[in-house]
Image (tube, rainbow over all chains, first blue to last red; front, side):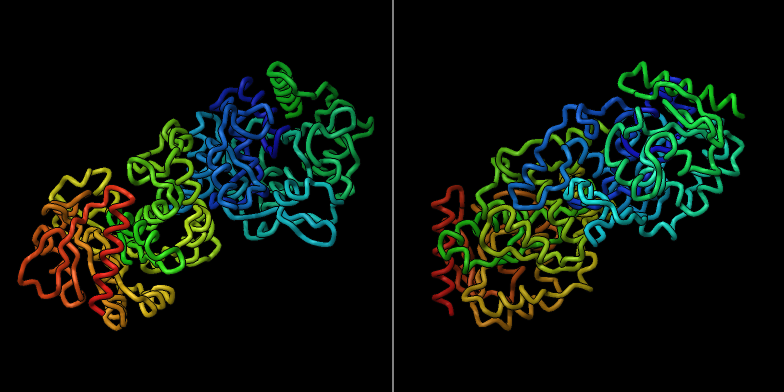
Length: 299
Length: 299
């Protein structure tokens, strides 16, 4: 699976039930990574990991039952705390940061986070090199997290770029996973800022094209709207239609099929129409299962 | 003041009462610094800072009322937690680590910690360069904190070296403080592993010698024994006698006077004999005050 934030993470959790930890590999977007409070935070890989470890909290981005002692102390010390990390969340970022400081690749550092969280399936950063999504709005470029949190993703999007991506390359683990996959599933994440950075790692798209497995995307739209986050604004900037047309256009040439709750009759690839809302463990399993069956039918 | 751990920190707190925050500058040992859990910990500068900010806890090394959420999470994740940091303590280490990652000097990074803690007097790292104390015991070298915590400082000391010290130099702030001082007080800290690294920063001893201020040490021994920590074992390794003879020998050629509870009649410099135990705010003030009066009498 390719995954960004919540949608992809939910489908990954469903996949875990369907195929088991040994068969699931998630390639996660690291364009949202940020260094803050002295630690390296990987929001998308962590979100996927907390979902796979059944640690995800009700807000949908932190760890269940987390506390805020360190953030409170930083705030009391007069430090900027626009990016808030719970204590357990921070502990996992310390694990990553310590491994990186020791010279570990991001792939191995995140593997330690996965181990520490109790998740069993593999979660692979899209690349080991720093490649950071920046957003232009109001005439200036900002790192992605600042646009999302400080600006609350409210200004109109005028540009998106993943800085450093040209020097990145797919890791051996990513290439092996794609090569050995029985199905490659693009999760219902934002095609522009979640899946886009993954596909723009030089050589990664070619590796998907070269893989023997069918490639199926699950649309991030339900009833023509994005389930969560700023997907619509980014699609508008990228000239993508809302609804099933977005993944069809964004992944044109790459897909063998699309899973969506609606879709054009004249799509270039087969569209499996089904309810894609994943609001329960049961529905996550169902969407995962039906997506894999669909992929199998296309291979 | 030159200070290492608890003894020096207690005297610094007394000095703060006597001379005020604008007049007190503490030069602290960074030979004990350690990178652990992904953060840069400066045990001695922090200890002094917590004392000056009235944050020191009953154990004598952490922050009063601190909690342990992050350490508990690291332990649950299977990480080694031989070096335990409370959540507030960790927050201050994150401040330092973030500043260093931004390219700040250790001096400026620790100044942010001082500000964040609410302490007002200046606490200066002895140098900005990494210079780390290592201890040889049982035939092998270990970083100082591992010897102290993992080995509980129990094996016989066979060697001490401060790795990297040859490439260090006194900071402009340290040189200015020494040059402008009315008195230079060597705190009652371990002469070998607390004050020793400070004096071995190339050029720092010469700057003390060149300063116009009298140099007075306060002995770390009370009734011929070290008040706290492994001072005796390190003095034994260094060939220093226990008691007032230790600072007299360790700082030979540098001192204008010594404050101690006892001392040889034939000491090379004047010895002010007084009760040096600092178990209360009142006694800390008294020792600070009497030390400064003694220094003034020698200038």
